[in-house]
Length: 478
Ligand code: ADP
Image (cartoon, rainbow, N blue to C red):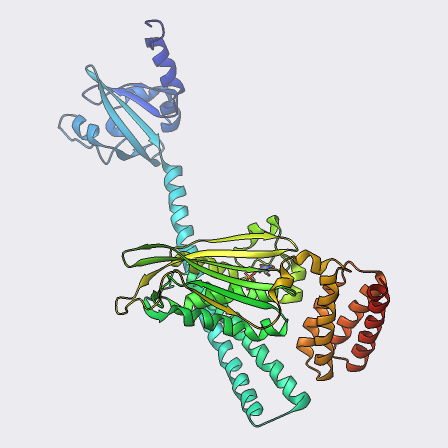
């Protein structure tokens, strides 16, 4: 053991190699020793040992006609150390007694202080930039909202005046464009508020079932237009009235729901709400919004909840959007003390689940009996045909034929009345349903979708008939 302990020789070597300045001095402040770093950094070289310590700390250790203030030095944790050339640097230091003498260890913290200052400056600059940007966003979104509302108002007046035919269809499109624009403006504003930490979650009483219904109603036209099925299932042990931010909860649900509709062309959308925990007046709700749409791959999943992220550029072109929806949704959920999670398989569908915490209303008696369920189903199709969704997309199966026939019937009605938006959705469905079919059929379906998209009645009808014959030959002949 003796041999392992530090020897005097070792100590000297370590002191010489140290990255701290080490000085030995006596009780009069006379420097007896300075290590290599001290000699070099302070600029005195070996002459350091001819000095007294107060030369290195002229401010702090000044002691005209008095004894060297060794106690002051012992208490000093920080100070300014002066070099021979008059420049100085900040140090953190400790002084320890060593027999009759003292040892001072000092480390130059100039770089660290500079880095800290830079960080503080950078943080201030960043905060300033965010502040300016948020003010800019608030102003611009306000300026954009005014003309959009103006256009919507005037177009609504024209519609109410009773226009018909092509003019009405055009005005309907303008109204929809205004709605999209308003949604984008709101998203940008929300995003900016969330980033600035200025978002406040309200605590007000609301009817939970009406809230879910409202979110479904907002999307029901699009759901029906695409021929999708929607099912809502709420665990009835959830009280009718809750306290929380109704508007923001609707926004979360609405975003997930509208995405589900946007990215699903055949099948169904399912909303499930259950109660997971209830403690005192707090309740945790668990929502699942699932669809049988295009799905999301694991690589795409990672990017999903980040701002401005859409899984790929072709999706943006086809479906539009700013990529802010899910990022806002995630932040709103977190403000409600919850989390969001995605399960998905490419080509099969997605299932977004999230939890949020709400409070129970103190003013109401619980009006619902535990164990019952609230259900809402729209009237589109018989659910049983979706039991095996894969078969629907497998060209030539009975399920696939039925689905194609059903969509073709709907498409022809839409073409006859020139309901181009709905027609486009059906033409797109049909194209997906024949994806695995023979070339001839695929080509016709593709051309038909193109012509429907261009709202060309004659060509759409022509392609419709071509596709019908091709289908008859292929499926009908089987
Ligand atoms: P946006 O505001 O543009 O709609 P979101 O953040 O809501 O953007 O969604 C980002 C992307 O996530 C979408 O562009 C889409 O690629 C993908 N996505 C979201 N929901 C679904 C879904 N239900 N099925 C398939 N893809 C989805």
